[in-house]
Amino acid sequence: MEFDVLIRNGLIVDGTGAKGFRADLGVEGGRIAAIGDLSGTSGKSVIDAGGRIVCPGFIDTHSHSGILALCKPDTPHNVMQGITTCVVGQDAMGAAPIAEPFVGPWKKAMAGLEGSYDLDWSWRSVADYLDRLDSVDLGPNFAYLAPHGNIRMSVMGLDNRRPTSGELEKMKALLEECLKQGAFGMSTGMIYPPCSFAETEEFVELARVLEKNDAVFVTHQRSEADAILSSMDEIIEIGKKSGCRIHFSHFKVAGKKNWGLFDAVLGKLDECSRQNIRVSVDQYPYVAGSTTLSVILPPWVHDGGMDRMLERLADPEARKRMTADIEKGIPGWDNFVDIAGVEGIFITFVKTEKNQWTVGKSLAEIGSRVGKDPLEAAYDLLLEEEGTAGLVDFYGLEEHVVRILQRPEQNVCTDGIMGGKPHPRVYGTYPRVLGKYVREGALDLPTAIRKMTGKPAEVLGIKDRGLLKVGLAADIVVFDPETVRDTADYSDPVRYPEGIEQVLVNGKILVKDGVHCPVRAGRVLRYTGRG
Image (cartoon, rainbow, N blue to C red):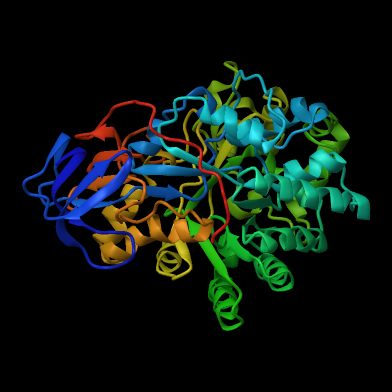
């Protein structure tokens, strides 16, 4: 027999958490056709794994490549680290659904997370967007979460108010439609408007729609800092009242003054287990995060959307109020300046040439350069860039990274946001886990691979990948466990990893002998239920 691809002499680690075993693997028609002793067979393409690890392709449960992929569909920063499926539509902010009046302001809002691209946003529904995404030459696969912010905005705009009963029913119907069109669940970003304007009961009602469809509630919770315990209580309440599965995005405890809460935070996960509340978390293996620069602004500044935010940034009196709120704090608000300090917040990208000099510099350094208070300099930057600017913020403790990594609820993600000088997780997350945390003994290899493959497939309800099993899609990574490592760091983040030797997506070779080979391989995955 001749396979399309034949991988010989590999150590198969299948994504279940079981120990590896020596075997060959044959691929035919984009699927795994055989695993075992395949001597006597041949392949149109033959990969001699030579004792390397052969495992399922990595599933990134938190990615910000949903707009980027329409312009640069091969997304080499993903496939070069072994990612074969990206889950987009995160943090309540995505491409669809979108109503015509909000396209302009929403593109500006999205630019802070996904970058600014010259695209014609001609889609309106989730189905339209997924069809558009499926029409380009994707490298990895893509899966979509229906963003709560898009749903709320489509029904009731960008105002900070409660929905009427009629509006809530329209939101529930729209979420149902998004799920039927292929969304795997709903994302929330409770620090980002307009999602941040919603109260608990709104989420409970929408989560009941998710439970009916056995889809997942994915959340950037309201606080990962001072109010993290009450914030977790809110998400647990949503899960308990609705019965749906809950998944915490980029799980962490932010800010030195909150590190003492860490054991109590893990205790909340234990409480979920005792109460049979279905909970999972994802995490990137770094002590710094990354998001849009506009998160440094108090919540009221965002009321009405990006255009209103820019108007307030142009108002000297509003700026005074912003600074007072940042310096004093607002109960329940994750104050990034308080968490990381102006010395610990660095600019990752801007859109204008004029301000490119700020990329890689801290707010403190920028303020010193222009001779202004760092906050005033940040306000100027946000105003000049029309909100299109990103940040890296240092908030965490390495011990916490390891302890979360070891939790049974955890799976790996990148939370990757592209830009001029991005967070190194964009290029190095999965090799970092394999090279640092496995080789240093924090995780054994089969467990680590399960947290990158089978576990995230279970979280999302992806049925046909995440494991090496005959009949499943041939998303496969071959790597050297002795040499695999991340090379990207904060000073030089745009660097591919080492040791990821072969990557297949739907049976097509995208990385060969460590070299990227762009080809149309990926497709859009659509949710059809977990049955």
